[in-house]
Length: 283
Length: 203
Ligand code: SF4
Ligand code: SF4
Image (cartoon, rainbow over all chains, first blue to last red):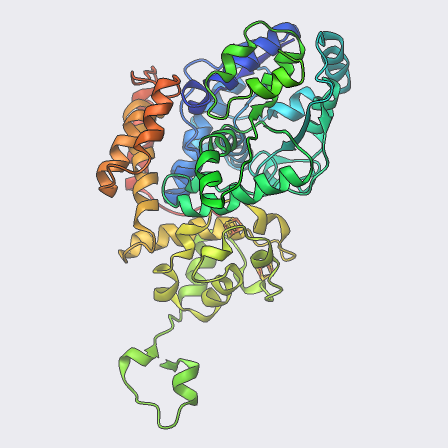
């Protein structure tokens, strides 16, 4: 299976471990990732805040390239995913307004969970597990933009998604139920209004602990970065110890597959998961 | 027509001075609906948007009040509000509105109208952040995070906040030193120019 891959700017910078783990996991599953040639920034949250035209033009260029490539498109960043889906819908409505060639709109755009969450791939994933994540209890945190708004994302269950839960169970993790799967962590305000992030992300940590989680798992680079880098500050403000490592879904899949590179991925995390993984006999 | 704030209207002999009067715009609702394509008139104040809004605690105008202010034409008050900049764009309101109003999209429209009208932004740093982001993309075709942080810090005159965090990220290889380079850089730059020429709105 060969798919086009749009890493997006975060996966080349602050979320480079997400990129590495995706490539490793896909390689193990026999999925060939063909980087979208000369991809450009999708505008993420900034373009639509300040300039509506630009917020379509930026992702439209990438959808045009993807259509030329003619494969399904895997987009691991939730913000990129949502922007590319939006551009795809606008292009289908009126391609001439945005690009100089006709647009068929046949490219299937996948965020990471929904991409892996198909029966044949779940079976393949189960088959690759060398080291089941037995006894590791965590919550699946989806955040906002891979799910909402459903008229753009086509998410089947935007308030209570299940796809990442299923994938984590497939690699043996104990996925704890909780009702904060899609509550916003505030990442878009992390630099400008950190106080708001302290409240929103702090509430998520409290809820995760209450759910009996020892770690959080996400598939969004903004969420991971926000929850990981701000955790110590929030602990100091709330006078609480959370100590919740925040994994990317694909990091845990890689660990379960016995990938020897896995420890290199979370060396970049702020909340060190090694003590927890040692305690669980997973390292 | 001049409307009085309720407290002024109810008081005895309210002084008729300008600082107590508000001047609703008769065209604001029509403008906003045309620019955004959203039917703000349909809002019946069920407040579902506000109940689910994660950032409401930090807002000066609740999302349902935003809708009412558009309906009433309170243009100046709304375009100066903090709310339109504090909205995190999480799309919860849009997902839940029983009248199918895309409230998050409306917030985008209001932010852009606020910038176009020249009023000071209720949260100046939020504007500076997004400008720094887009400036960096305009230059390279992709985001150069290190440059964006620099541009933002300069604009916001905030040289110490999060410095330790940025250093830690550098140490962990999470910020690239070198700028990205792509072939389509010019093509991307032209999109930014288009924006300046024709800025007609989409439906
Ligand atoms: S959810 Fe929709 S109808 Fe209800 S108050 Fe908000 S905008 Fe109005
Ligand atoms: S998109 Fe903005 S207004 Fe709507 S719920 Fe999220 S933060 Fe609140």
